[in-house]
Length: 141
Image 1 (spheres, rainbow, N blue to C red):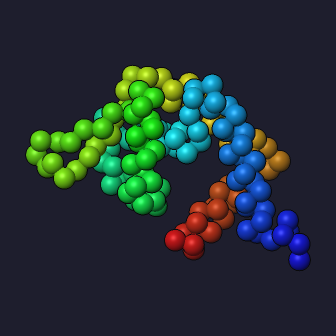
Image 2: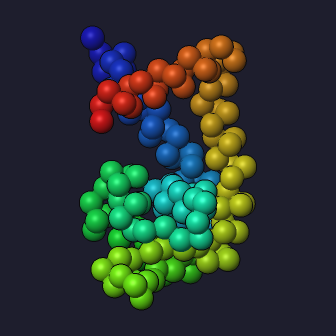
């Protein structure tokens, strides 16, 4: 069976195409897809700040990886990190106004990318596709 027919090969190709398209769109904001994912996770939270530890767990990455993304976003003025007085062991991250603006401007682009992904599916197939993606995701955790 050739690699293009295997699930893993197809998922890899889809991911690479989606990430490439997203990176091209996000270049105008000076950020990468990985950085945008981190920004959007902070943006969509119910709180004005997120513990760095929560981002590590959500993205299933090492502390050094999450911290590296945050450092790059801080340098770009999109987030700021702070340590609460009540527990100096924790680091929290919040969006700056510039970070919020990037998120607002990118929401539509992210939605367009999502629509492109499922454009060849009817509504019933889309629901089934999402259901199956969740099932696969749960199985590989």
